[in-house]
Image 1 (cartoon, rainbow, N blue to C red):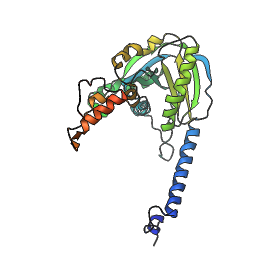
Image 2: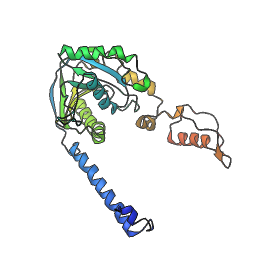
Image 3: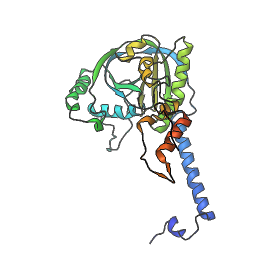
Image 4: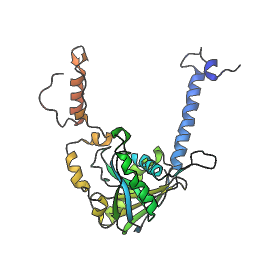
Length: 295
């Protein structure tokens, strides 16, 4: 026979000292764990950026339009196509170690593109013809998948990326939520600032290659031939023109409020749809709303 803490305290009031203490302990433990994972991901790691060289090479990749956080999942899908099994000797899942093989190329980094509409390419740079063949052979299966299987339904393409001078930075990674946040709000801004100090302007291309096993990512920002790294696609300034009417709130959330509607129901004669339109006007996110509305 055994009793857990909840069974022992089930008859206590919700705001009893014992319950408050329990909540405090749980929140403290979770907070410490979250903060510790942030430190492991490089929260306080100094950003040291130097001039170096991006190696270039033949890039066999999938080109995607998604939030940048999806790049990790895309790389795992590519590893699966390469038959790379990240397991240890006991069959347990092990960290990936694909640095200098798997690369992600992030095209839109100036904040003008809404979340979820940013473009990136994920793939391999290698002279290994067998690895390239495996990925290109996977194209025959892509047509079997639908949009819900994204990115498996996207075919691999091949381009040549040049060897160029680049800003280079090394930063810790854990492959989790902290790493995604630090990439967006610490690493990108630092690289942008360095890029502009070199006399460059506008959006920049950022390239990363990571090893979860080593816990590190290498970042490159090409300092010449930027247009080539867009791989035949529009530059960010051109691509971003279509989002000119999208508010900063929508860009941050990655959500188009004009595509969202509420049913014509309400309480006491006030319709939820009209209240929603009023909030859109207040927040400046009602680009397509016009005319007089009765609330």
